[in-house]
Length: 190
Length: 164
Image 1 (spheres, each protein chain N blue to C red):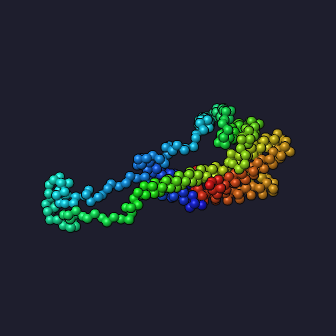
Image 2: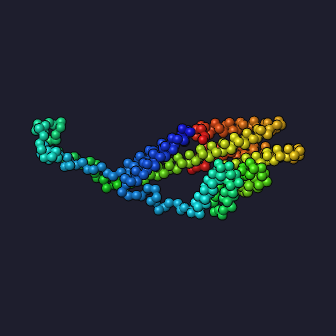
Image 3: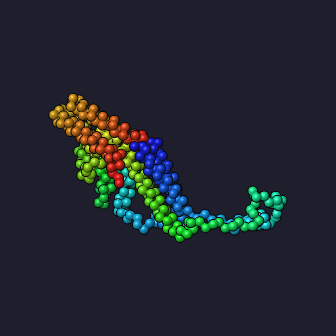
């Protein structure tokens, strides 16, 4: 945490230094916002990400007000929005599906929760946090189904659902372990 | 690992300072003519009144009555035409270092966010997995998951400190 604070403080100092340096120069070449070679901004992606942030915020407010149905409705609007073709948009949608599934699981709607997890998994592949999180939620859904089946006296099906839950949770652990390994090994850079 | 993650920060500060120096305006010329060379000139600068202390001129506090001889031409004077280009090249190189270090710093912060998020998910999954482990094979899987979680937690703590 200390290193993180240091990094943030360092970034703030650098921002000030950079701004001061640019103000001092008679020529603005090299200063942020003055380079003509800046990467083009995908406005549709930015608009989508902004709308997604707003809807997540709305869901937060609803959850805080104990309005779970309202939170689900906000997230449902998010996953039904037309999304641009971009990895970032896919990850936002996968994340929203995982959150939806968690809320539906809390409400006891296992079928809907499972459908949202499946829809989320179609958006992300490979070793990503989002896939690991969806597998984790899928494991929780299977765990809840196992409990429900056991309560109904369907022992064989309950055992099967329990085995499925253990397998999914184990897979989630393995995916997130690789995500951590990758994030900290600088493997994604250079 | 911690040292590696702080390295971009240090180089960023260095590059920023270098860039800032490179971009600064040149210092004002301090030719001999810009300094009072005589007692009269010094008096004029002091408001035209001769101070009593100015009368006895001492070498330690006042310049010589005669203007000092011009400094001998230095070898660098001949190459002064090349200096702006060299200066600009150094400034651009410093700017590139700054950009690279800034990118590395942002990437390091993002990597820690990502690692902490994954660690939290791994923790939740392990807790649920172990709560379901009631047969020997599942208990072995639970122990394996706990071991992985413990190692991952150590790696994240070493690289990023404590997660939020």
